[in-house]
Image (cartoon, rainbow, N blue to C red; front, side, top):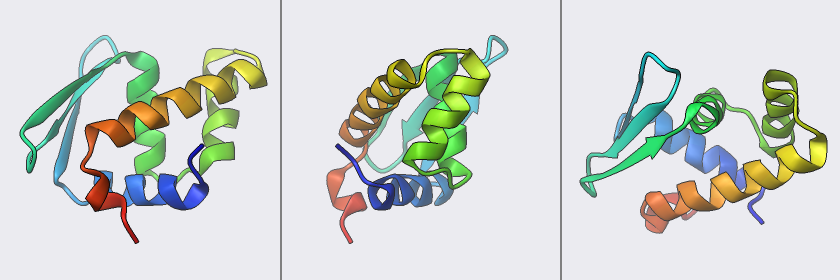
Length: 99
């Protein structure tokens, strides 16, 4: 499981400009890693989480915001957030998350 420190590093990377993200009209989106030349398609929930991570939200805040925004239970939200964070870490170069 990822820690708040890991989520913070993801947020910093998203704010750095190297990961370009674009929201689409249906609230989904895409992210492009300009260094790795990779693209990731995001559904509405994924795009919501990326924006929250970029704004500095930690793990517990992501879960709370997902519960509030999408009206899911806390255990479901926590599982979804943790799964999404693992996918997001797989998308970026893990060297970018090193201390």
